[in-house]
Image (cartoon, rainbow, N blue to C red; front, side):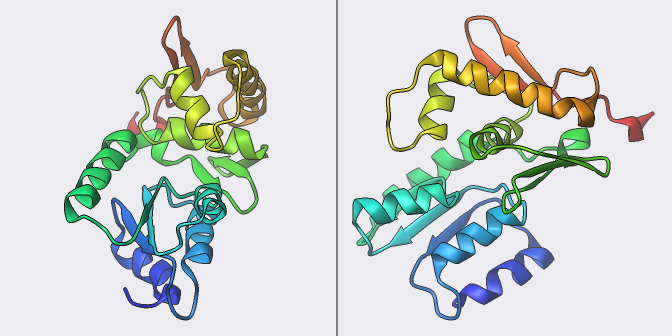
Amino acid sequence: LSRGDLVLPWLARHGADLILLDLMLPAVPGEKVCADLRAAGHLMPIIIITAKVGEEERILGLELGADDYMCKPLSPREVVARVKAALRRHGPPATGAAAQVLLNQGRLQISFNGNSVQVTGIEFQLIKILLQNPGHIYSREYLISNLYPDNRVVHDRTVDGHVKKLRRKLKPLFGEWETISSVYGMGYQFLPPPDSSSG
């Protein structure tokens, strides 16, 4: 698409597994497109492609919800490699009950079965990562690197603290079902509640 204002309407009709997003778009700049995609609950990988090479621009892109950032000029082989890596990280799209968990990044809300809860920015990023591939075990190291892209020093127990608080906030949505399960010595995974529509 050649215009930023066409992205959301096009996705509503067609969907996408991954988005390569140029920042220099007419009508609506890529930065706003990226933020709007996440605010609308779109979870597919977003790889920003741009001539802006400054560190601040890269950090801004990642903070807006992008998964990767590539600077022009581009090597086609590197683009393909980055796309494959992003798709591997995200895994197959969620189905069943997991697909019914809705994320609103603009409001930092998580919704399920018509009920919503408010979370912090870090908690929102945490549930977004876990929802990318329900059942997949994400290590603490992976979570830290994706929750804190500025490479600050963060202790493993910091992630445990975020998980504990997020579990407590999710109880009104899922009851006693522990959707965020810890796997000893490995990390955390999202376990969808039983899909009531199937039985």
